[in-house]
Structures are given as structure tokens and as C-alpha cells.
Image 1: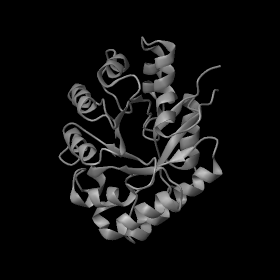
Image 2 (image 1 turned 135 degrees about the vertical axis):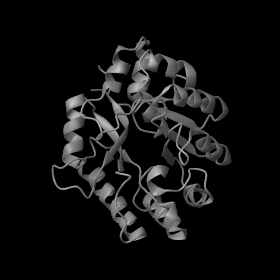
Image 3 (image 1 turned 60 degrees about the vertical axis):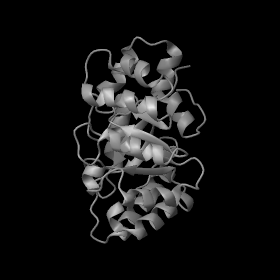
Image 4 (image 1 turned 120 degrees about the horizontal axis):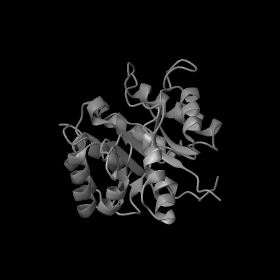
Length: 262
């Protein structure tokens, strides 16, 4: 049996017109075209918030509806909370994980304008900290002021009981090396291959640099039509067990999901 692919980096634009870029139809089409069986789904980080926290609540409600409509494709989802919304953001984060059953949160600091290690983000994390099994995904970038990798390290050390994912952790050589350093210092961070830009043995180096059990396949759908990252994993010089782990086994362990085969 072929191990199934679980993609940890897929966004849906819940406000997109039917069939439009980033819509659920677009996401499913791209997953099918790439042979991606399942994905961890999160709202598109650039959604508009004209109504403040109520806009965020609609995103989380919409995400829950898509998970319920496609349980075979999206076994788990990550909600959103906007640190610029203040205390109500923490309440919405708690609602997302406790009432809606979302498995954590996804942040993009370059979109929300608040640094990963800011106090306003910490308030949100404190709010969901008591919920068992939550996972927090942060988009990182080596040269970003707000989402630099070192900022994720500060947060991971501040919240050693939480589990984090560094999205886009291998975008270039500098970011790649920063991820190796994070992995050594922070055992509660996992690392996503989405948007990897290095070309020579990227997957093999990632496995060696952060550990075979902490590398996660991510496509960055809907931004990509075809995921060359999936092919990178499939052709990498890895033994079959490690390849299976990167393609989905590690993500299933992280999100406490049962293994499935395709």
C-alpha cells in the first residue's frame, strides 16, 4: 500500500467566488492534480476584516463548514485570530479550538502587521494553551522584520508546552540554516517544506538538519498550480520509512491522526 500524502500547508479563500482562485473548488482541483490525498486547511491569511473580530469569526465558522463538508480530504483545520483585535482575539481563538474543534491557529505576521513574538500574540496563545493537542503555525521568513525565524524561537521557548510549525522553513539557504538552529534549540517546532527555493538535496538536508521526524510536506496551495516540493520528496535519497514520514506520517503524529493508506 502507498502511504497517503497529508499536506500541512493549504489555505482556502473562503470569500472567493465559486471556482475562483483559492476557493474550495480551486483547492480541491489542485490537490487532485498533484496527488495530494489530504490537507491541513487554514483560511487565506489576507482575508478582509471590515467588522473586526466578527470577520475573523466568520472565517473560522466557514472553515469549520468546509471541514464538515469534506472530512475525507481535510481531517483537521487551523483557525485564525488577529492580534491587532486585542482581547476579543483571544476569546475568538478560544472559541475556534474549544467550540468549533479546530486544532490550533495559523498566523502570518507580515499580513497582520504584528511580530510573531509580540505580547498581543502571546495573549492569544495563553488563551488556547490549556486545550490539549493544539498546534500553532507561523509563516516565517529569514529576512522579514515581523516573521523572522528567531522570533518563532523566542515564542517556542516561552511556550515549551505548545507545538509549533514553521511554514516555508526552507525558502533559501539562510532560512534553511536558521531552521537547523531552531530545531536544535526548540524541540517543539516542526518544519514545512512549502516554498523551498534551494535546489540541491533540499529534502535530504532538511531531514539531516532538523530530524527525520520533524520535516513536514507542504505545498502552499493555492499559490502553486503544481507542487515541485512533492516531487522533491518523492525523488529524494531517503529510505522508504523516512519518505513516508515526510509525506504524511510526521503530520499525522503531530496532529494525532490515524495513519491511512492510498
